[in-house]
Length: 325
Image 1 (tube, rainbow, N blue to C red):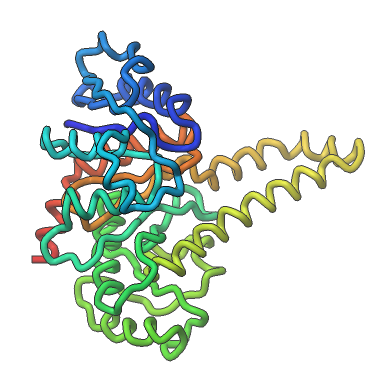
Image 2: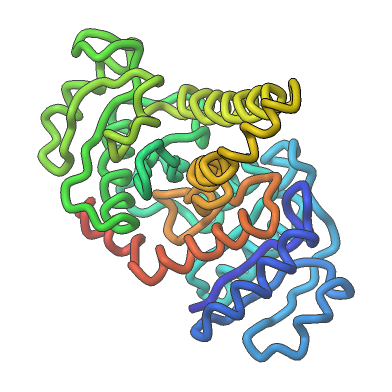
């Protein structure tokens, strides 16, 4: 399995990617890694027969304009894209600029025939043990059509089936009410298509407050709403965590209470930690492209690498092509 890793992307850069890559190598013997970055800082991998170092000269800013990014052929991301294509690789992972990765993947790697627009899809934790659901689109697109939402539902169902071994995952449309007539103009247009689509198990509308309870499998939404959903969940989790910490600092009795309930809070922290979900796949392009979290640490980036490994093993791209045909 040939995997290309942008070692320089993300807020933490090499601090996260080097340690995660070492851990990944210790877990898998059947991989060949192309490590893209400053070769002087990647010398520790030169003696590893499973690694090839490809030098890059620049690092794209996280807020770089996508078209500007495409012109910087010496950046770690664009060198990674070229390496992916030249060596006919199986997967590409980067924690760098989302917009740049999306643009480069669509223009260079291309879409799967029949796909109108690729979308970002990832897993979310829920309050149920070992239960996750997936959301698509998370922000690859600002505007979508009803046909695109219908394709998101098909790809989301297939992704969930592969990742979580579920034959008929339940599909819901993110809306401002559960009634069929509720939703934005786009939702109202997409609803009949989803309802009539025999290739998915469509259950109707759902409000944003409900998915984290763990009763759904696939949440379909336009990219704008999906990105707001993602950021809202992340922000709420951080706020609640800080509030809980502060409440236990009030006095000696609250501190004792924390010690007595620490295991329970640790379990919640592990269960709801986004670092364990494995990044977001740009599903719909002709290859496995994973966008790791911009602030990835060792665990988060390792999860993204393992997610890519699983999706390649399961041959997800070919299965999407077959499903669309």
